[in-house]
Amino acid sequence: MNTNELVQVSVKAADDKRAEDIVVLDVKGISLVADYFMICHGNSEKQVEAIARELKAQAQENGIEINRLEGLDKSRWVLIDLGDIIVHVFHRDERSYYNLEKLWGDAPTLNVASMLA
Image (tube, rainbow, N blue to C red; front, side):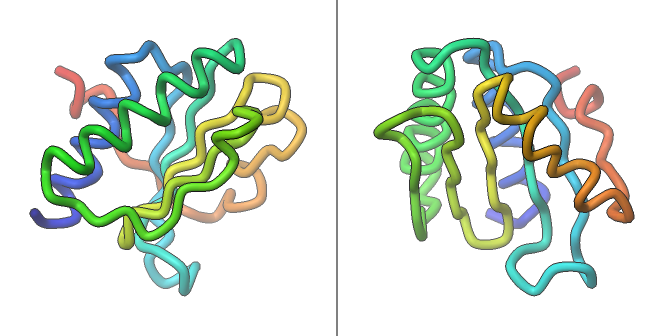
């Protein structure tokens, strides 16, 4: 699976669990950690957990190795390292506090709506 397909699978998995405000930042050349950061949020710990578990399930179903999964125990900020893409699943309150979109504000964003069409 190429990186673009991985991004689409991740976006669709998050959307399936009604993740809100899904943003994909193209951090190639900006970050040494990954090519893309996907950021989304849920409105409760249960929803954050459901989004993260769906992302994990879709990754496993598609043969994608999960390098690291952290934060599921409290479900306030779950980080899923899929190699070329790092997924941040926030609780709504944590997302506004950490504001990763501003931190990585110089990164272009991908058109998520076209991935869900």
